[in-house]
Amino acid sequence: MKQQVQFQYSKALDFINLSNFLNLCFEKEYILIIINIKILHTMKNRVQLIGHVGQEPEVKNLESGKVANFTIATNENYTNAKGEKVEQAEWHRISAWGKTAEIAEKLITKGSYVALEGKLTHRSYDDKDGNKRFITEVVANELLLLSK
Image (cartoon, rainbow, N blue to C red; front, side, top):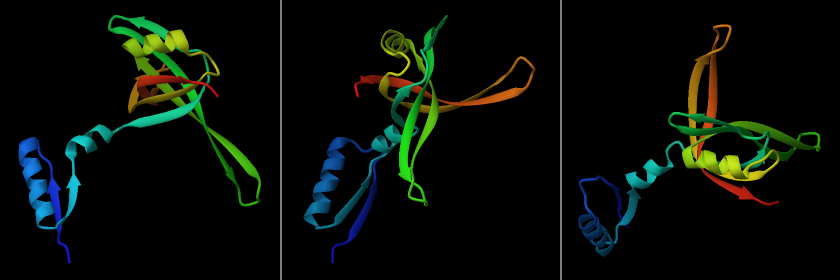
């Protein structure tokens, strides 16, 4: 029976040492389970959405650069317990900064079909009546205009 070996990648371990470790494990016929922290780190707080834009992007010029805000709707279709087909839309608030905001300003219009990748963020602000409001949004770092 083959033994299982767990190995955790660290920055201290360079490629040569990793290569030697893998060769040793395969020579000894171990089943190798690798947890690569670098790969897992890139997957943290990652959001990918495909949907239709709900309104024209609202673009603002700030001292730090441009910001574009818009919403997209993602649709889910399913059959309920009664056998009826149901379409449910989820609305997502999107913000884009810098070059991504410039792309959104030039290419995205209401109804556009887009794919985006970004990270989920939460923030709060005080409204005009002094009430604290909370917002959850996706900060997009990649946008792709799709055709349907």
